[in-house]
Image (cartoon, rainbow, N blue to C red; front, side, top):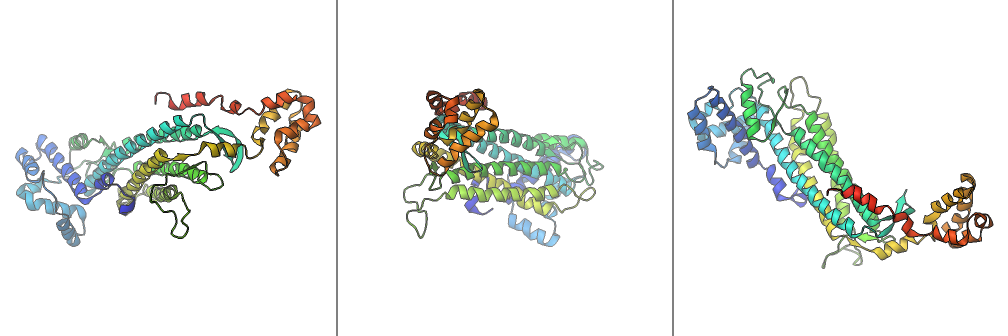
Length: 435
């Protein structure tokens, strides 16, 4: 991933030095287990840790060897032998390359998940704080992009909080699912390595044992992991799109923070564009784009082929790095979001009271008017208001058929904004219970 959309802590998980360190730890822990069950000398296992436990691996040297061997794990083992010496013959006993590669990937994805879970926690905290801040701030609800009935801005944020709470649960489950270790040999039968070695390495690397592997860990686990990242990215885009709409000039109910000295356009000095949320929309597309290749990796040939390898070398780092950046950026947007309650109130009243049409419809049915007739009466008075020809309440009071069923006082009561907000506390209690 390019530095522009990367954060150092997540990037570090995918650096070559980190990968080789994990490879070494897998091999060295396996040697410990092999020594414990008497397959290799205890002194050899101790020497491997002593000679390589604190080494900074020479990435350039490993790359040089790989150019000749055309095999990354062999290149690493060859480099390892250069400073371990004779004891290196006990490294990789009974293992196949995928034992190292797949277990390493599990460690990296688990570590990446820990960062992403922390990112979601920070986002949830920001959403909760702003939701409580604007809990009872009325704003028009929209369906099909058209004014519907009132909600509150706090409810919009509470909805996002609930959504990302679900994502946290999903990601935690996906992390647990992906965190498996396989050291089962060439085709997963443990022919040349004892299952106790796998169990030991799994415990040391904070993983669980893969119940049944072939030469690889089954890729349905990876598919579910990346699918989860894709769903999280989609929710980032949903919130970003809502903010982008609210920042439109004709709406301006909220907008991204515009810092001193910031410029919105190279041509038009007046511009304040929603560049952060537009950026989030694009980043979400990238993460979702990595889901299908992960799904297609599930169907490998027989006990293994390497058609998944090139895919995972790219989507592992790119998907996690991009999502990490996007979650942090969305948190920043929410924390600094500028909100305009007065514009929200103005937009609420923009259609001359039409937002109360359903209340009038229901009130008429309660007075004995058929639903079909009630709908006709309400719509007959609503359409002129839609065209800018009068005020809804005034027209209703002047309509003889409506007035025959509802008194002026009863009509006035139907236009009470508070009616729409009476259950906000109930919804907030559901969303933030225990939070």
